[in-house]
Length: 252
Ligand SMILES: NC(=O)c1ccc[n+]([C@@H]2O[C@H](COP(=O)([O-])OP(=O)(O)OC[C@H]3O[C@@H](n4cnc5c(N)ncnc54)[C@H](O)[C@@H]3O)[C@@H](O)[C@H]2O)c1
Image (cartoon, rainbow, N blue to C red; front, side):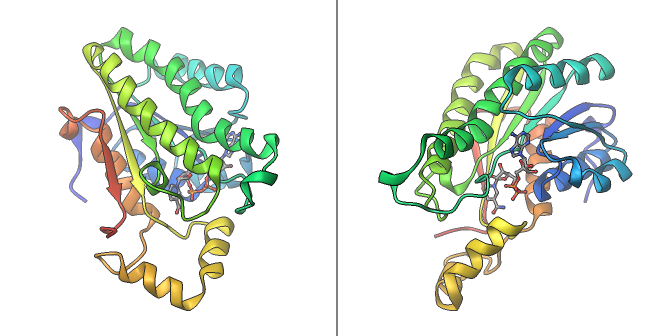
């Protein structure tokens, strides 16, 4: 990959660094010479990022004070925050269930981790970015930000649509302060138990139909998502804000 020199020495905060995308995103920034900080609820995935030189912290992002506290700690150690990647999220172990039997608890957790956490982290980070007069936020949205979710999980679709709305609104509010806010919409990537279970449940016919609807005729990888994130965070995207970039191989 050609290097993106403007990322050397930048301080980058990545949420959900214990996930497949989080690890790949943090690694990609690290490889460009950035100082990378990550957080996740579950520290069991920290081994690989820590070995790669990423400073990892266990944080429950449902606790907004803890989310803001992590950003303050990163900004204090790094002398500011240049890039925030809101990657934590997912389906919290849930599968589709009929809307009329959906519990408040199941709805709340998915809204909290995909939308409210991004709000809390962004609010804390923008104070530092505004003081510096520059910054970039990249929100890991989903195809479910643009259309109904393949997961069938109502809260996931609502949260990811909300995250896209936050992206567009913040881009307009923060642009005058030199802060860009963009989003990535990954297609399905088989990253772990939830996505593998989802893929298996489709069965061979639906799997073939899904792949047939992808121009590149393959599913994506975590590295595909990481490269697009690097682009949006870098000065190469210096006049790009309020946008959602689909990284899905071209879905019909
Ligand atoms: N894999 C896909 O196909 C796909 C497609 C579109 C979007 N996404 C999005 O990409 C992001 C990463 O997905 P992934 O597939 O790598 O794995 P994932 O969905 O399992 O990642 C979620 C990460 O967020 C962390 N997290 C959950 N609750 C948390 C909390 N309360 N506090 C802190 N961290 C918490 C988890 O521990 C996990 O590491 C998610 O936002 C997901 O919604 C994934």
